[in-house]
Length: 169
View 1 (cartoon, rainbow, N blue to C red):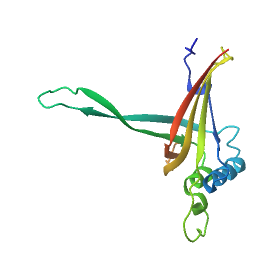
View 2: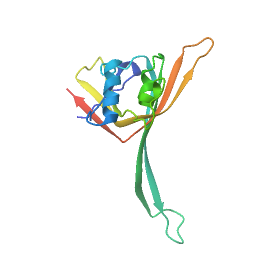
View 3: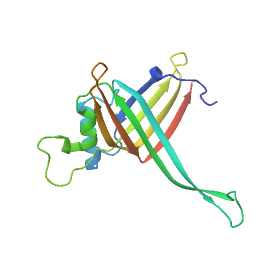
View 4: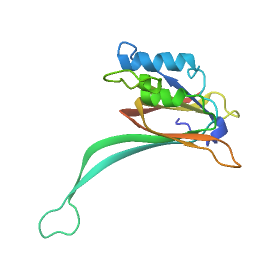
């Protein structure tokens, strides 16, 4: 039976992980994830959004106003996260060695990692849903320093693919 529970943001945990530590991008991410302990939980996150876009291409025959076929095209995975804590970890995951001063000379590898989001309702501890976003690279970073509100950093990302898994105790 599929998991039919509803979840709240407080039911979620989000961690970062690396599949391939053999690549430079994977090693960079692994070192940062270990240094900032993102393998147990990424703290102070809010407004996490993951979007999957399946580009559809309609085929129109001459003389017909409605499409006669929809062909699947590219699949794009992207998203957004905000965090109420600025310690350089996320900007280092965006820029890699380029976040250091002085920056390295030459090409700079960008860390690649996975985002694992686990949702579990405490009333049903054996049931959970897990989304894994693979091959994530941060695309943009911004910083907000309001006069009378929380300091926030926000990032957009792109990813290679996504998977989902459910457990029903």
